[in-house]
Each structure stands twice: as C-alpha cells, then as structure tokens.
Amino acid sequence: MKKQRKIIITGMMLLVTVALQSQFPIFKGCPVTVDFSAKLRTWDGFGFNYVETAQTIDYTSNPTDYGGFSILSEQSRREVIDLVFGDDGLKPGLVKMFLDPFQQKESGAAYDHETTTRNMRMFVRMGLEKTRSRGDDLTIITTLYGPPAYMTMQKTLRGRDLDHAHKTDLANYLINWVKFLKEKEKFPVRYISLHNEGEDWERWPWDGKSGNIGSGHDYNMYWSPEQVIDFLKFTRPILNKAGLKDVWITNGEPTNWYRFSFWGYADALAEDKTALKNLGIITSHGFYNGSYDNRWYGSHTSAGINLLRVKRPDLHAWCTSTSWSRMDARFLKEIWGNIYEAQVNGIIPWAGIQRPPLWIGGDPNPGCAINVNEDGTYIVRPGYYYYKQVSRAGQPGMAVAKTVSMDSEIPVIAFASNGTKHPDAFIIINTNFNKEKPVVIKVKGTTAKKFRAYRTQGESEIYNEVGNFELINGEIVYTAPANSVTTFFAEY
Image 1: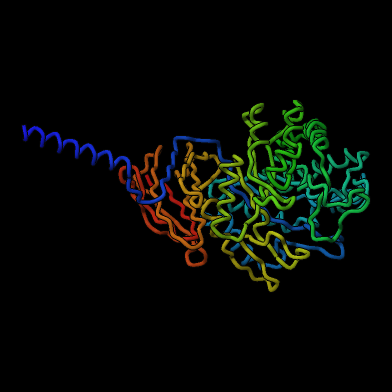
Image 2: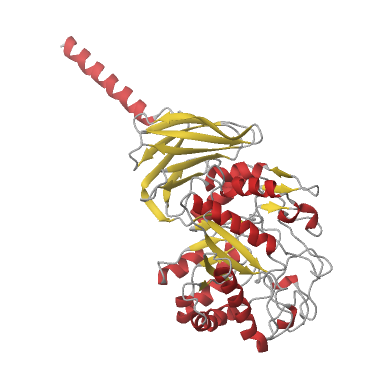
C-alpha cells in the first residue's frame, strides 16, 4: 500500500512539474513569426525619386537642379547610378518623375520638355539601362508638380485654383509630357499622378487671390475631391485618342493616408463608378505624424484603400513619397507602417539624391540616400544603407508575407519569392536606440534551411554580412543590436 501511495505521489509531482512548465514557459527572446505561405498582396517594388526643378520662381534667371547631377563629373554620375541601380545597389523597381510648371508658357504654345528636366531624364535613362542590363525593368510614375501659371485662376506660379477654361490645356500638358517620355526617351511610363499634396488648401490665403510664392513650399495647386473625380473621367478618352491606352491616371498624392482616407478623396472615388473604373492605382504620400497637437497629424490608416478595394479588389496602392526620417531604424518602422498598416504594394521615398543648399529655407525632410556637395563631390548617407535593407529584399513581383512580432520595438517585414527569381526574405528591425533585443523567429512556408543575413547599425555597420543562420526546429534565435536592421535572405 505504501509503495502504491509512493507511485501516486510521484505521478502527481510529475503532473505538477509538467503543468508548471506549460504554465511558465522560458522565453529566449521576443516571439516572432514569419509565414511565407501567407501572402498578403503582390509587391510592385521599392522606388527612387530624382527631383530637379522644385522651387525656383523664374527658371530662366535661376535654373535649379536639386538632384545635383548637373555638377557631378561623368565618373561620379556612373558611380551614383551603380549605387542606386547596380547589382549591388538599391535595385529599385519603381521611379517617380515630376512634371514641373515651366514646360509651356501659354495656351497653344510649343512644349519644351527638355530644358528643365535634362538631369532627371539623364538619371532615369542611365538607371533604366543599368536595370535592364541585369535582366530587370522599371515602372515609372510621373506626377504633376504644378501647372503653368496661365492655367490657374490667379495667373501666377503656384496659383491655387484651376481655370476651368484651361482644363483641356492641362490634360494635354500631362499627355504631351508622357508621349515625349515614351516616344523620345523610350521610358516605361505607366501612371500619371494628378497632383503633389494638392489637398492642402491652407497653403494659400483663404481667398486664393495670391499664391504663397517663395515661402519654401514646392509647386502645388489645390485639388478638391470633385476636381480629382472630374479629371479621372475627363482624361481617359483623351489618353485613348493619344494612343496611350496603357497609361493610367491616379488620384494624385495627398500628404498622408489619413488625409486620403478622411478628407473626402476615398469617399468621392467610391461613390463614382466611372472614376473608380478609370483609376489606375491608388496613390498618396505616407508622411507619418502621430501627434494630435497640430493639423499635420497623419497615420498609416488603410481605411481609404480598404474602402476602394471592396469595390475593386484588383487595385494596387503606392506610397509615392515618405520621409527618410532621421535615417535610422525608425525610418524602417515607417516603411513597415506603410506596408502592414496602410497595406500598400509599393513605396517611393522623397528625393533620394539631394543638393541641400537649393531648397529654400532648408528641406523639412533632409534625410536621403546620397548628398551632392557644391564642389561636385557626393557622400553616401546612412539613409542609403538602411533603405538598402528593404529595397533589395522586396523586389517587383514578390509578395508581402504575414509577420507577427510580440514587441512593438521589433517590427518585422517579409517578402515571399512568389515565383520570381528572388529568394524569400525577412527583415528584423530594432527601433530601440539603447538596447539590444533577442528574438526567436519561427519561419514557416519556405523550403530554405538557412538564411544569409546582412545588417545596418548606424555608421558602425553599413549593410555588412553577419553570417548564415540555420533553421533549428523551424526557428532562428537572433539578437538584434540597438538601432539595427537585419535582412535574412533564404538560401536553398
């Protein structure tokens, strides 16, 4: 009897031990899951934006080239192109080109698409050649930065309101520029975006009688939701007649996804069947501001995108400008927000190459990949190496894959190969500036047994290879240094 009691007590102790173990798991780090089989949406790619003419009031007396290619030597230009488009570079799949307001002086006058765009076109021409030499291609979106002065009610540069007597002139201005790019330059232009932050009606005096010229703003014109709808319906037949059936109009580019969602633009599109049918992709800037204490609040909400995808599930969405932040790990957190919160298919940050003295009053978003100095030299900035972590991982045609992280300071981005030549890849971000963080990464939905990792951490590591990591029982245990971004590429 005593022996039986002893066996029972031992068994109970074992059950208690098992229960305690299941009740109190031992954490080796932040639990993270990457599931490459859970594909959320097709990925169109990361992009690059060269800005040439952005602020000058009189191009004749004050020509500008904010991108700086005009003062670089031929050798330096080729080095920059290789840094951006080369096989070991950023490898963007998307390019944004602005249409400035100086390419026609008056109604019926000849177009001059060359004078104010020569450096931007050179950059894209060289980039396209480099991209195609490695078997890839680019998709180009061109954005109306602002119309010529004569098309506005104010008859001034940055005039607030469109003179509807010149509505056809504006449509032709857009179309003639695209035909020039496609026919002369042979550029793969796919989309025309109607405006640059044209929703921000408070950038002008309330009566609209004079533009806020020379204040440091770039070119704009006010675009109401009604005007966006009108142009989406008005321009489609003109595009078709011009032989541009493969070019689509977008809704323009509000400052952030919050404004697109809640300032009436998404609602207007959802309520007009013809405009929604004619919409090529959804576009907006993705500038994030989580503070409620000013009018610049902007979240990465997907409300507007979701509203339109209910009616058109095929619609892709691009973030066509976003801040480089302080060129640190939190820059990648903003990219995570655009991908997983706003649910976009592509991201193009604001001006990737900059010549700082040419921005009046100082650029409010001074981060970038490359700076051009006034002596004709250039420097590669930390933003380049942080951006490289995601831009190389998320190539066109891949798919955004589902991720889970149980730490808000460890956002995780993943791209599934999706039948492309590109390997499955995931990115671990540590936005804590002071503390390294161990993570336990459960990897699902891939045939890979190991991953090769590259890391950027401030200026101490700039896209350095940090080794191969084998999956052990389907997991990788990794310690992410403070302010670091690490990309893991599958090896098969």
